[in-house]
Length: 460
Image (cartoon, rainbow, N blue to C red):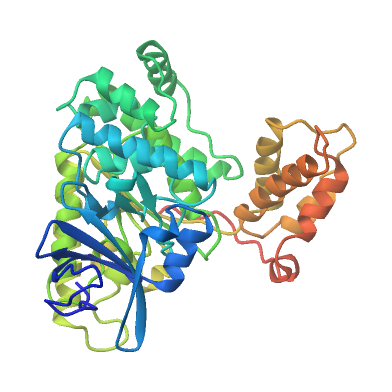
């Protein structure tokens, strides 16, 4: 918990007296008061961002100066929710859930591209106020599903699983809540068809054929055809580590795997469990695994695992608290696997990881993921273009030459940018000129960097 910006008893211009700090972020804080209000304070640059997209009428914000800083503030009655979504609080009633869905829909109308996963929920004004933290974009389906379940990362598209996790409300009520947010809901019949299709088809990962084959053989087949494996004593997939240079596609691959499996997912990274306080990080690690086991089958994704699981003697004398964090992982990973929690970890620096973590029984598979080859880039580009209208004269040779060895996200950017440029110029098909222009829009350092192709790799 950060230090409060304002002291207890501080009197606002509207005679509201500050009592205690409830929630806080980098550029905002929420306080309880001695009266009937809770108050949101935000630094002026954040208030200006909210005003720029008209999320709230600027007249609702007051302004104060304290010390060397000035803040905007917004008062709300205590009977309404005023809290960050990341606090993990789930709705107390169907009416409360509908109110949140309405706020999500109305806020989305005002901004088509902002991510609301880090937003502050202002129920009184039916708004979600994003805080633009340095984390990846989260779709509205996941924002709503995570909020409804009180912190289980699950999309509303996984409707059957979501209904199981929110069994305190009727399925029809849940369906209405999702629709109120402006999101689609598949009918039960189409869901069962989808589930059957998932069980019978293989996982696809365009641009990563070898990683696709590994996931199908060592994870997907064991999950969806468990009976034949259980007869021979294999109850659940082993934990996996993906390692390789930044931009090689580890996160993309894991996201597609999680989406395909369609289980609740829990993330262990610096944002979710990092803490400067003694014992707090190991406590948060334990809480993540507890939630994953409680809602199993589920997935735990450990991102940037070198932050938590570096060799205990790497770089000199280790701290007792780092040893404690490593020990917590050593204890919880085998327990999670026994309780049907799939554990997937990622790192850029496999050499730093503690040998005790890498031994068999915790992570049975250590997979190196290199920068993509020409064939892998071609597979991804073909997959991306297959669903888009294109002219017949497109030649991809120059594009593949330029993108070979670059991150697969660069290929996705070029195709998306090509579509945008075609639409902007009034065309109904992507042509060669659009692709060439999109390639030029890549950052210069990505166009000119030395593309050293690294192979897929090893399964230790």
